[in-house]
Length: 308
Image (tube, rainbow, N blue to C red; front, side, top):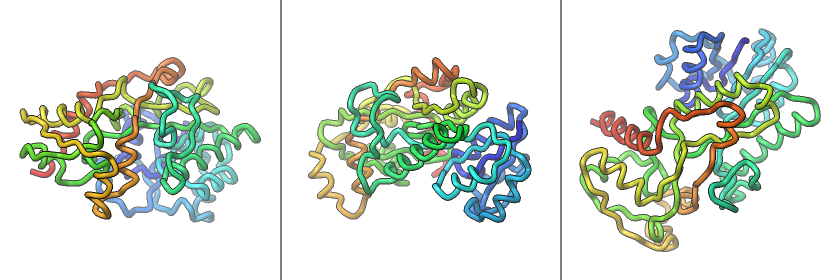
């Protein structure tokens, strides 16, 4: 087994690379060399510096005969390059998102639901195109693909989602200082995380079980969702604080914050995220090592310590 992790110095990518390397697998990282935040964390893993869209460079790299390729930020161009030049490829896996299922047709949602992309202009629409491309390639030419769709990714290494749907740096400071935070409508929209380490474990699970995972899509999430109210309460409790919440109709929040936030993210926050990981458990042996509450708490504390 010879594995190439594309984007292996990013937050998700370096966690996957480290997880595979710790297992004793032959892992190589492909990076453009621009992101250095996590580079030291994977310094013991062999790496190559190239643009994954450089066809000549990629043809030379893929000639090394990688049996498994993981792409954390897939693109149509890179997929096309891999399909053409990755000889001997046994498994291609890429990271998608559960965002394209929204608005959810049922709760908890699973892989049988339509995947439409949330809004036509959102990034999830592009993920739908990417996912459809590799699945069509699987059906047409047995391109050995697996699509991993994580929920809201959290854990050390990235600041948490805030009450406006983004990841603003002062969110935890607001919580610690018990400032009143707006939430859309009644705060009962559901939020479901996946810890970044459990997401990395899911990629390993898929590699370990090709008989099940090839040609399949998997939702990867922790075992239950929480309301936005509960999310703020858990975050505040991590510091012995109380969450102070003000409710505003969604449209009033959109009007209040205007161009200071990403409106799509706020609207998405107000849309239920509630999924089941039953398929991944059943077919891949996926077993989360974190609870929803633990993941939220750990991320909050990491962020606070990082910010000093």
